[in-house]
Length: 245
Image 1 (cartoon, rainbow, N blue to C red):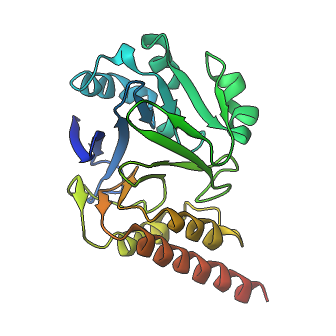
Image 2 (image 1 turned 90 degrees about the vertical axis):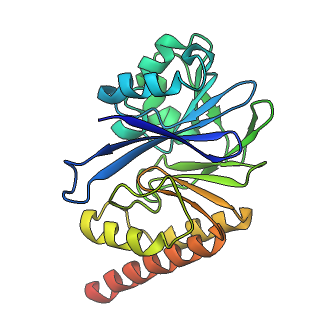
């Protein structure tokens, strides 16, 4: 395996590792995002076992010890498995996450006390402003959240829009259809009545770039893609209610 680096928006880099053994023959990508600024921020740490790959890739962009902020969507191995490895090599780094994630997991699991972010709170990293947004149970995890970089209108989506394959780093093609297919296969989302509403609320930011954890990043009408994804989840939840009746 190797980790590829691509700039998907001004000063935002995708570090992508393709694993062909997951969901063959299509395979599956694991993506981290480095947001450059005076205080660089990394969204997703990658799996603990992938830490050497990601460390070496990141070192081609900045010295790893310069990392100041470590963030992710929710507490799960591919989102934050290497959290403590990054803390060990970046002495000034802090984990930043929402209140639920810190109370439930990170106050105990992180080797340094995390910074608790309120819903809508902004971290100014110098040259970039990154806003944290709570998305509980969406797509899964009570502690789930996303981050939005304001200057580039980039929404770091976590597991939203998950898809299979090893496509381009950045695409303008449909990402909703492949996400629907991945949901059909993995059934990874915690379907709940608020899911569509939560996803639609993200469209108010009118993101131009959607940074996917699993799949290519998307450049285009992010609000329309979010609405279409929300519509599909509404359909799934409505179907569950019909079956229950």
